[in-house]
Amino acid sequence: MAIKNILSLLLMVLTTVVIGQTELATTGGTIHIEGQIVGAENQKISLVNKNLGGLKAPIAVVQATDEGKFVIDTTIAIRDYYFLRLENGQLLNLVLSPKDVVTVYGDARDLLRMTNVIGSEHSVLLNGFLIEHQRFKAIEDSLKGVLKLDQSKQAEVNAYFSPVAQKFFGYRNNFINTNQGSPAVIASLNALDQEREWKEYKQVVAMLNYSFGDAPTIQNLSKFIMQKDAQMKQIAAANAAKDKLFKPGTPAQEIEMPDTSGNMIKLSDLRGKVVLIDFWASWCGPCRRENPNVVKAYNKYNADGFEVFSVSLDKKGAKAKWIAAIKKDGLIWPYHVSSLTGFSTKAAQDYAVNSIPFTVLIDQEGKVIKTNLRGAQLEAELSRIFGH
Image 1 (cartoon, rainbow, N blue to C red):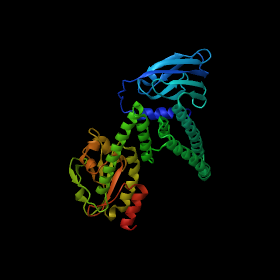
Image 2 (tube, rainbow, N blue to C red):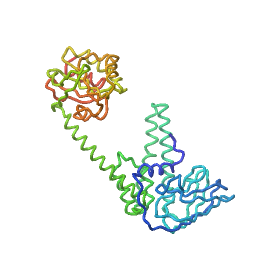
Image 3 (spheres, helix red, strand yellow):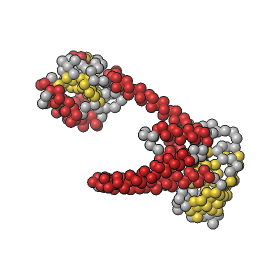
Image 4 (tube, rainbow, N blue to C red):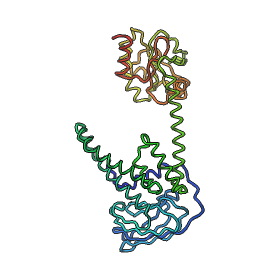
């Protein structure tokens, strides 16, 4: 989808990373902003800060003259990222510190692209980057639209987009390198992929900490970095434990649960069979859509020694729905168990199940073969095992 206002990108970044209100330093001072905005005649112009009330509680609101001229004389508590906001919703980024004197000449039709800011070099740099990013995203989104209509143009789109992307990312990297001491580099965070460029993302935030670290926005960014780093470490540890748990040849954990009649059944009761442990639930759409594939595999290979051990993660009070789903989906194997406690059931915790459907295929000795086999993948693995 094409971006109508690139300023919303920066506002999104500031909104997303705020983890809590940051205590502001007590040192502040007056600022003076004046100028003229064509198209904003006799309209209200607001000065806004995300950490000081946001759009609902502007720091200052003034009325432009019938020529679009305005003057804002107010006090700010601390240097940070601010916005000029027009009645039509247009936003202009301003990097402000106490005692700043700034002049703005702009056009309300496109405040980002048609504005000249005097007296705030950092604001000029920041908005300049956003303009370039806007141009790049417009091309990218347009080409995505082309591919959505016609996938056969993939090669043609790649040939056109590759040099465009290379040029922009070169510009982005140069912008970061040449403006390391400027708070304006915050704009580059919009153009960094957090998943693939997390190291670079953190490096930019480190630069901002050095140059603008007392700003509430940067303090909140730093908290975000620490929180996400901690989460990533937890995920990495969990994935490592899961890899160890499901390493081929590892004995599968015992499961002992009641069946639909309340009788206790053990997974180890099926020793000597190739077993698909299938975690599912009656409410799980993807599980229900996968069930026909499991039924097909069962019908084809059951005579060869293949069984299914279905573990339902339905919750308390859903026993009737669980049993009805078994009948409706034709799950004809006898091994259906559930404690009706959802994801908190011991088997789900033992198998580190955090989403369903989830399957574990084990051999005749109860050792792991593979996990998450579905559809054609399950068919191919069983064909390999049973030879047909």
